[in-house]
Every structure is written in C-alpha cells, then in structure tokens.
Length: 185
Ligand SMILES: N[C@@H](CCC(=O)N[C@@H](CS)C(=O)NCC(=O)O)C(=O)O
Image (cartoon, rainbow, N blue to C red; front, side, top):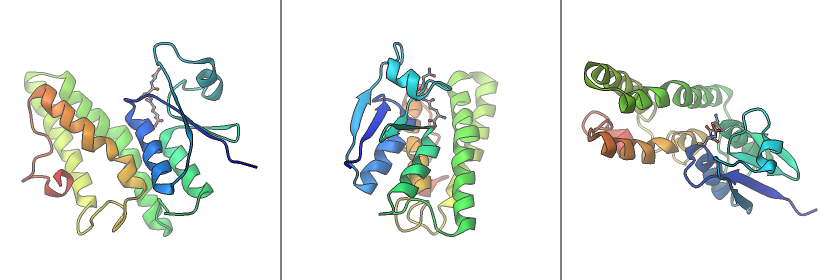
C-alpha cells in the first residue's frame, strides 16, 4: 500500500518548519495543506481536537500532533538519516534541551519583545543567559547533533530565523558574534 503523508501547517509557523525539515532530511514525499488559523479547517479540528494547532502530520489516516512528538514519530517510522542520538543519555539530553527551548528560551525572548525600559533590560539579561546555555551545548561540535544535523538542530531551527527578525524589530542584537560565537555562526 502506498504511504499517505499529509502535513497541515501555515507558511509562518516555526513549529511546522520542524516537520518540514525532518521530512526533507528523511527524503519523504508528502502533501501540504496550508491552514488559515483565523478560519481553521474542519479537517484540522478533527485531527487536532485538543490543541487545534498546526503542525499536524497525518500518516495513513492517523494524526500525530505536537511538533516534537511528530519529530520522534518520523524518526522511529523512517530509520534513514537518524535524527535522535542512539545513546539513551544523549537522547535524554536532546529531549531536555528541546523542552527547555520551547518552555524557557522562547518565552524569555518573547519577553524582550513585549517589555520596555528597566523591565526590558532584565528581560534581555534573562534571554542572553538562556542563549548562553544553548551556546554551551554546541561546544566542540558543528551541530547540536554532532557532525550532522539532528533532532535538536531542527528543534532550535526557529532561533536562526525568528531571533534575527525580532532583533530588527527592536533594533537590538541578542545573538552577539562575540558573546555567542557558535550560535551566531
Ligand atoms: N507546542 C505546539 C505549538 C504549536 C503552535 O503554537 N502552533 C501555532 C502556529 S505557530 C498555532 O497553530 N496556533 C493556532 C492557535 O493557537 O489557535 C507544537 O510544538 O506543535
């Protein structure tokens, strides 16, 4: 039976781009359904009734939601070009930092955007502190995944495009080449 693979996403969703990148690395063909989040389709609501968000991957009629969960599903289903490390400890660390990125790093960067004055100075310090923790994960490695792009690189992909856009909006450099050379590179 031919595989049926559909991805519900929007062009702007950084979470969805994770899935796009993983499917590309695995060399998988799929259909894209672009959603209008101001008028969600009946299919999206049917496939993701709990969170009603993109991305949703539908594989042979079965829906998988939450971008990090989808990455793991893709990695376990299609074994070529592994994304997660095989070693259980390295795998646990990759999952830990991906969670940190979604729960702590992203909100600390958002706080910089929505604050002003003294509050913004504090928000910048907190965001840079979090970015330094990420920088440490890159020590002596080309990618978070080592020599090849892996799960954590895909999970942090949003930092590469969204932070530079936010920097332009608030006219402030967060990922500084001197303070965060590896992340900046
Ligand atoms: N934790 C979710 C976040 C997904 C998410 O926030 N998606 C946004 C687009 S970037 C969305 O669909 N928002 C619609 C809504 O909140 O109603 C994931 O990793 O998949």
